[in-house]
Image 1 (cartoon, rainbow, N blue to C red):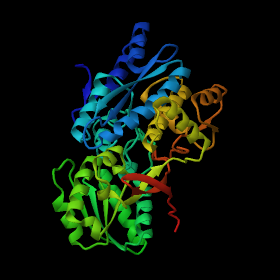
Image 2 (cartoon, helix red, strand yellow):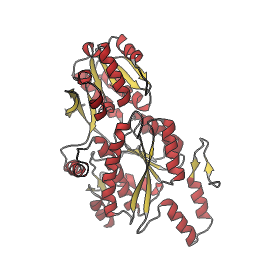
Image 3 (cartoon, rainbow, N blue to C red):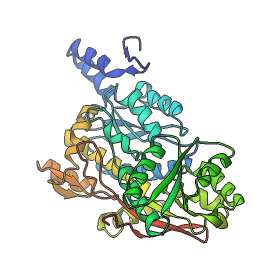
Image 4 (cartoon, one colour):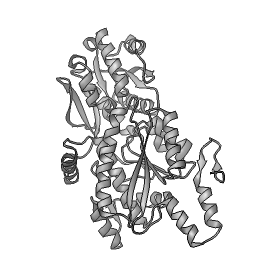
Amino acid sequence: MTDNDTNANGTTNRRPFLKTMAAGGATAALAGCLDSLTGGGGDGSTYDVGLVNPYTGDLAPFADRNDRGSDLALNQINDEKVAGGTINKITADSETTSNAGVSAAQKLVNQDGVDVLTGPCSSGVAVSIAESVTIPNEITHIMINSTAPGITNLEDDGYCLRTSPSDAFQGQALAQVVADNGPSSASVIMVNNDYGQGLADAFKARYEELGNTVETMVPAEQGRSSYSAQLNEATNAEPEAVVFIVYPQSFMTMIREAYEMGIQEDYSVFGAESMVSDEVENNVSAEAINGMKGTNPSPPIESEVYQNFAEDFQNEYDRQPTVWAAYAYDAYMLLGLAIHAAGEYGSDAVKEQIYEVSKPDGTEVSSIAEGKSELDAGNSINYQGASGNVDLDENGDPSGTYQHWEVIDGAFEMQGFVDTSQ
C-alpha cells in the first residue's frame, strides 16, 4: 500500500496507516473497513494470528510440537468463542534463520495483517523479528520456544513476552547437573546465536560459582558438514566434560564425529534441551549418545492442569506432549483469554490484557470456559497453564522448572527435577 509508512529498517508500519484512516472520518463504511483489518469484535469475527515456525532448518523437529499445542488450544478456544469470535492461525516458515524468519514475519504482518505474532523457536530468529518487525510495528509478539536471557532486556515497550522461561534459569540447572555428576572442569560447544551464547554464559556463571572451571566456550555455526575443528578446540583445553548447547541437526553431525574421535571414551558428555528430539534418537546410534546427561524445561507433571492437558493431547494426537507443546498451548490460551478480557482484538488490547489474565492475584482458571465465566462476571483471573502458572513478570517472562535426563539405550529418559537451591 503506497500510503503506508516505511521504517528505517525497511519494514512497513501498518499502524500509522490505520490511525490515519480512522482520523479521516467516522463513517460506518470506514468503521467496517477497520473491523476487517484489525479483527473488529462481535459475533462472527475472525481474529488472524501469525505463527512463525521452523518447518525447515536445524529446528524443524520443533515445528510440529508448536502446531500440535497451538491447534489443541485453538480447538478449545474456538468451541467457546472469545469476544464473540474465533482465532485463525496463519503460519509461515522461519527456516531456522534470521533472514527467512524476518521475511516470514513481514509477510504475516504486512500482507496478512495479523495484529499478534507467535513463535518462532530460535531465540536468535526471535530477536531479529522483534527488532525488525514486531517492535517497530507495535505488534504483540508471544514467543513460544525462545529462551535466551537477552530477550528479557529487549526495549520492546511490553510488546514482547514469552511462555517459555529464560535460560538464565536453565543455565543454573545445567551447571548443577554437570557438577553433581563429578566433572570439575568443562568445555562448552554452543550454537553461535543468542540462545547458545546466553545459555552458555548462564551455565558458566553458575558452574564457576559452584567451584568449577569452564576451560573454553566454542561457538559453532549451524548446518556445517563437519565440526571436527570445534570438537578439537573443546578437547584440546583438556576438560573433564564437554557440554553441547546446539540444535538437533548440527548435534547429530557433532556427536557422530565425536564418537569416531573417541571423545565419549575420554570425557563426560552433557547437553541442553535443544537436542532432545525423536530425530536424534532415530538417526544417531545408541553407542554415540548412551550415558549423556542434561537438562530440559518441564511442566509440573503432577498437577491436575497438566494431567488434563496431557489427556486431551493424547486423545487428539495419540501421543504424549512435550513441554514445547505445552508452551504453545499456553501461548494461545493466554491470547484467547486476553481477547475476551479486552472485548476486542488488536495488538494494544491484547498487550494490555495478556499480562492481566496471568497475574497471581486473580481467580485461578485453567480453561477458556472458566476464564470467560469469571471475566463476564467482572472478576480478574489468573490463568494456570499446562506448562506452569505462567505468571508473567514486568519483562514478559514466566518462571520455570527443569528435569534432568540421561540417554539410556539410545533414548532420552527424564530422571526427575533439578534442585538448584544448593
